[in-house]
Image (cartoon, rainbow, N blue to C red; front, side, top):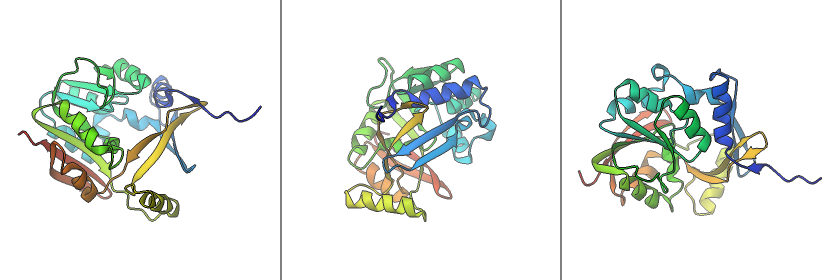
Length: 247
């Protein structure tokens, strides 16, 4: 029998389910990310269940800045939503992964199946939008970022704030540098990656994710309904605070 490859499905959700069923024990499940050049990266999935006291400093700072009603975009297993619940915030989470939504709900999060471009019906508008866990990567690339930012603005109440974490693509790794050079040659930003999640025989559809420098992010935001208010850095990672231009 020939190699037919993995079956398309909710690999990310299956990873979170396995980790949750193992009580989020470190080493119980690993998130497998495959890049389109064949590079494979594995990370302990228990980080999606990190308690609020152990969240990274930039995440904790973002949670302190959150105000009013909050939309957690890419809620995952709900680590940020639960941390905000502890602070008395009203939070709704959305995620395109049905398995992630299921796990987040089991943990007490108001999680709904949907995405930035296709939000759940009747979702409403929010005072704070969260894109934590490097989820500024959901901007995808320079070509699609304007539409993503416009979709986010449609979910924002007047005067809303968007709090997102990202990562500068700077690297000394030869494989990553070669990948970034291929991106430049193809007209993409260097930190754009095409990837999919794997779990056992499952794989998600391929999708694009963006690691942008702060300067690149500023250029992407400039023509959008948002304005870049401030940036807090922690080595190669950063927290960007965006304000609505209607404020």
